[in-house]
Length: 110
Length: 113
Image 1: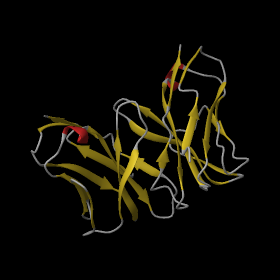
Image 2: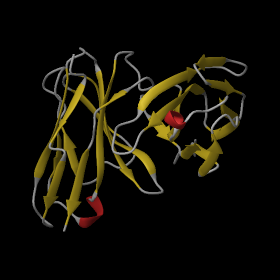
Image 3: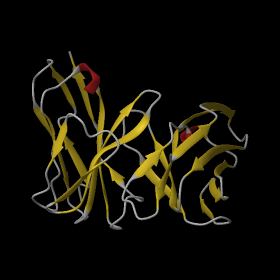
Image 4: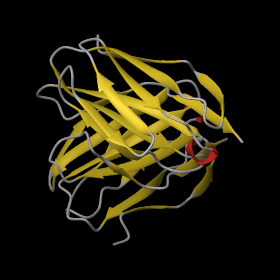
């Protein structure tokens, strides 16, 4: 059965304190792995797509990486505005469905 | 562009009532989908559509109906509301023809008493 597990459930950082969020997955024939950001009371906002092991994508203070079993979202020198829930999702080949993890709630304190 | 719009933002129903959640997008996206989000459960796919006239079930379709008569609109119907359908509902659309890079609407918070 396809499964996505995110850890930790919650993470509190000081401004400037770098860290990583983890997304481990079990899926037959990965078509893509996706990261989204969700602010309270709003819909998720797309961040990155990763297609194959070894691939990396960067956007401002965020960098997403992918291996055959997991993905990491690295946050370098975070700012309070990076506080949000980060969601990971996978798409199995030949399907049009996403399977989401339960997210990591990130709080960055000034 | 307005992107993906959803109405209403909030709704309270009594058990057994029916209603339709509206979703529209103005980006000419072929793929549209409905999710529900519950605490500790993550986003779960209810129904999706890869184009006008084509719909399919997601992970949790029971109790919900959809239709796609135009590219722009993808309404979600609750036939007979139950307390278990209390949730936040998100509509999303994608230009890629697949499910991955989706644009989400602002959500509808539904409470069933």
